[in-house]
Image 1 (tube, rainbow, N blue to C red):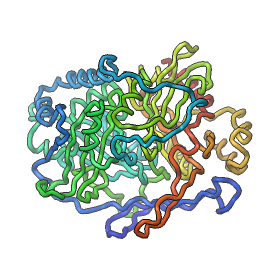
Image 2 (cartoon, rainbow, N blue to C red):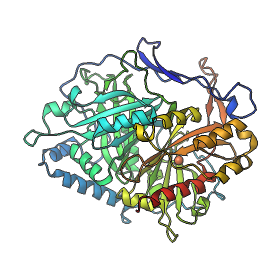
Image 3 (tube, rainbow, N blue to C red):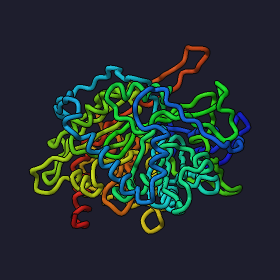
Length: 543
Ligand SMILES: [Fe+2]
């Protein structure tokens, strides 16, 4: 596995990873052996235009939600508005769970055994894939550096004091199609106007308010603020969302690079808008227009590895699913599906989990293509130990994002690198491996042909878990919590099988092979082992 800088067809810089398969010769006996891949991230790089003095905010959706003038009023408030921002966050959270405003429940749990998968293609607007995940934290430089080392991600864009952003510091990390962004409020002098033209013009994202960021971190610690998805048009997605019950957090904004003539109808730009997802987490709609080619949002300055320095990359390819923990599963699932149209992709009840100590109910929502997967969990009660979901809800001070599943095409190579950089070397620690008994029974449970004997051995040595469904095989492993609180963590997965041929036939477009989303399931067969590990870990925390 190696990462190299290479000139792409457009002449721009490219971050390209080439990897020879580690699964042995093609045509081997196992599914894994037949997999070979070469990562081909998109080309990036362009000239950074001059900074403009103004920014344009558009709200064509015609909804009566807070707009720029109201946001600026907030910014004019004295410094203790952190308290008010916190109250605003709490009020927003309460509104989502207010029975008076919550829609009637439409879904009901039937359990994994009785669930019949069906895709009604019911999206209310086009959603294509995950775009990015944004964490809010106390110090963006330190936090992003730890994730870069721990996950093998390269810093590709920044917005901070060096680019003129006096409101917050923000760094974007990338590994193939996986993008993480880390943002933290900057110091603002007491006597400095918070809404000066210079400050407003330098801030890429109009929804990022320093006081709200501080309040968010005070409440949740380091946590995910936004799950970004690619849509055709963020303005249209926002309008349809709020008209179908979605709670608007940030009305649509058109974002331009500095120096771009914003009055030109086809000027390159991006549009963003935000709707509440659960707790203080927002679903962020992102769309590109006029051929905007930036790696992240406009006004972020692109970054490249220094000459001779190999980019960090452990082979992570994209975000597979983003899981939330909430108090009321059905209410949340109804809320999300009401404004997105997302359908139910899978579900699990406490009896599917298989431990007597703690439990959960879970439903997975998916968009039409099923490449945006949003599982949601709730705690169950009446068990010997407190549900791990209830622990999360207490430690996070409310609902929030529990884990991010990151996909790789070579989990052995990825985990070897993560372990090499983990623990005391700055990266992340993994949950304890499963029992000897688990690995002894594994070939019998998932099938002898799922992996070669050598691969079964490597699964055991690296402490991975394996499961399968009626379509494919899943290899997975979980980190311990990423920060100080036992809240958000990472799952690394490889999905095997479910290859399908798409495209071809139109305008000479060649057919290509694509793996169906969710192939191999979500590890139901591993719930028991996984939850035992988490329960054992939580016993050490005395929470
Ligand atoms: Fe997961």
